[in-house]
Image (cartoon, rainbow, N blue to C red; front, side):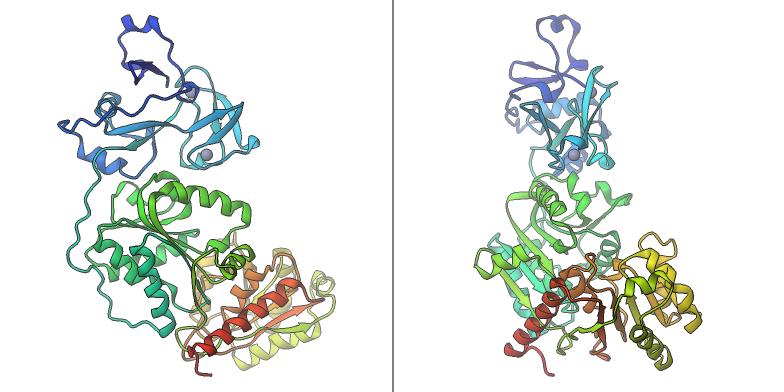
Length: 503
Ligand SMILES: [Zn+2]
Ligand SMILES: [Zn+2]
């Protein structure tokens, strides 16, 4: 689509009578150098409340709106919405304003039917619909939808551990004071409960809250939990293909991807598992979080394993943070053992296991002790599966693309599988009550410090079985292994000093 720029207003080409067209040329929005200011709001305009609900805090592509162009334009002319460029061009360089992409190879051009020219589009965020040089992003500028909550919305009868309570107070404070806060909570600390009071406080202040996490399964797990403790509050659950896409709610639970549709929407953003991304992805994520939150808003980061940069910022006082160094059950974190196992790679390639590794496995099988067994690569894991099946035919292997992934994890929960071989896919998010864990080839690059801390964090989660064995089998220690162990020891030490553990 192209716009005329007339009398300080943008007018879609299609909406201008032909008689007026000669005096000026229409352009794709990205090529209009200075966009006119948004028209002043006309308080008497009878705006459409459906459009308000659809667009509040959002940035949607014009073609995704189910309203007529006339109606949209009329809201624009009365100051109720804005057209923004989705792609800006500066010195021949493109930037996608929706996802922040600036990488040349992630832009492409195509003959565009909408404007009849060659348009440039962003490949990076194409799964959310195509942004292009002639495609405006549309956002609401009219009155906000009031959130009126009078009774405290939180209905929860559980109690917080001392460590959780301390962090919970810090979250409430960050909400009140629109601050940023990192909650550094060990695996099994119970980080979700730590958010309850903060979300409650925000909702009572009429604030809009978003809890964003990288993985869809976490969204699906968190959504019913939050609906249960905030029973009177509409909750929007957003992931690829979810039905709540257009639901306006005071509380939103979304995959980080879905944040791309939001624009200055949230007063409080909780970002879960920031460390699950490599740094380059983290940067892109930071961009869309900044776009989705209001200019004045709180941001709470949750993680068990902040990266080195963040930890340094904590140490030097540049980042406000709170730690929960102990699990809710008040037992210390199991500390990994390092066990040298020789050239595991050579052995695995032949479908064999180093002697001490094999012994570790057979002992678990004969003791009836469930275990997770981590491998650096799928093909090595599959090479070894036949041997494992001779030990116990119920042993299974799982990886990211495994179509039976869910069933196998469930079978593990039901104790039908004694030992589950896995790639790093199960490094986080899964909890089995009584578990030993081993990593073979712990020095492989794929096992970063945070991956190893997360893997160790699978052990001893339940208060009935708070301990367990965690062994890193290796052919030479790495920095990551040493640092992971150090991090766990440091958390245990802090927990002891603060009186948060009993053993
Ligand atoms: Zn176009
Ligand atoms: Zn993009």
